[in-house]
Length: 240
Image 1 (cartoon, rainbow, N blue to C red):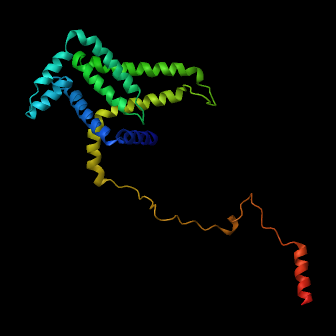
Image 2: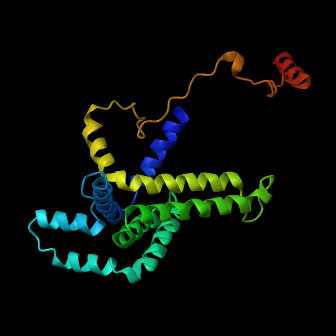
Image 3: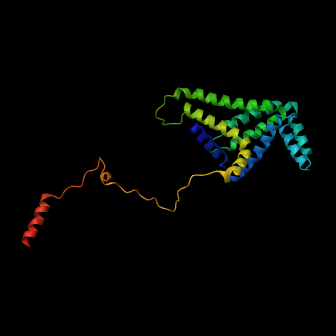
């Protein structure tokens, strides 16, 4: 349980560790996607552009161009293209990694565009199925290399394929939750107790070594003075 919690915290930090322009774009996509998903549980489900139209209408901004765009996406002759776009969105989700999170945003935008013509369930199901099939195919292709001990070339390993697939799925799912998560973290920040951090300007104080630990088991003890050196000292004293 503790390892799962640490992994979840690490992935959340990766999800928000982006350039500022990308984090702003993520916030916009997160708000749009969350409003679209939330509207599916109401009495009147809205399309992605329907959510934008409701927002601009509430703000008093003319939204006739959104109605024209919705009619263009809803044309029956474009449903096949939009279905392919949903599959492309799922492949973008599969290409999401800790250091490459922009494909996850592009995947959600592709799913939103496809949902305008083929609906919520069809777009999301096609995207999720495309991602799962892609990861499963890579996992099957990696089975012949499951007993590889020394990696001296680029190869597919089952454990790495599964880990990358889980990471991609988690980062893709986190996108709609970025804005609520940032708001929650900001609200809880004054109430959280953090462990003290070491001061980088102060040097670490070395611990005193015990007398019996000064020489380890593999270290030699200091050699005793040679007998000839003792004779020379004694002869010098006699001469004086």
